[in-house]
Image (tube, rainbow, N blue to C red; front, side, top):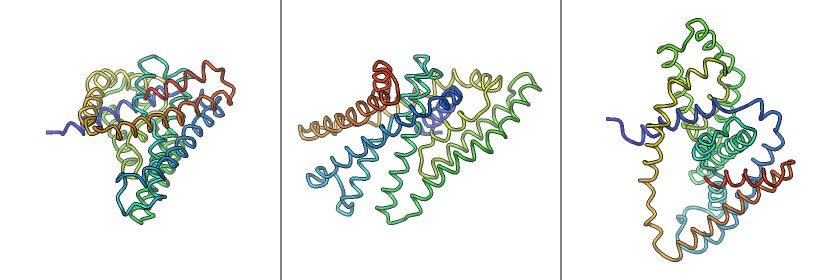
Length: 294
């Protein structure tokens, strides 16, 4: 019997692959400045605010084990504050029909970079705590190598699927199965390197050639994934969230402080970055709202 956690992760992996198929890479190239500023703001500002807050947490209470140094604690909390709930953001944009728009493309592009950087930072924390530099090298080097391989080698190879689709006039069972195997391998690889598995799935979807092949893959997998597999992930996540552990006024105060840091670091900073990139205040505020809703 397959555990629920595995089913939920499989559903999430396929879903993020489908989001990658919707990702408009050509549109992103034309707005690289906006995406870069938005991503940088969503990384640097929350990281600094989280690192500053960690100094207070470190000296007040038992939030960190004795073997954890002050700088490791700062790096950990700073990295944690940079993470975006990428699947939630993708789901909201997809449901609103915004995934392929300019707005959705910038939000997804910035969020994907934010999460990749955040996982690399967490790998550095783990490497520092365990005194093993190889952990950080594997995460950073593996992530970079995976993206480069997917763009320059994987993308041309995937064009073979287009030829197969044109020849058979449809995606057959063998082609679909092979594509799912490649997807699971990519997700496994990024997970092994220390980066979340959904990053590998999203990148694979983004580099997969569009045309008829992508459309038929979506038709074969979308309904089962969004209607059955993906809800299992959200239910599983909710069942494992123990809100009852926040049971004192002090803990609630700390929770509100972290939420405030997230709003200030992710929300306000990203809104100002979008405005600096040339967006109007309405578009800047919308990008902030959608990133903060996750």
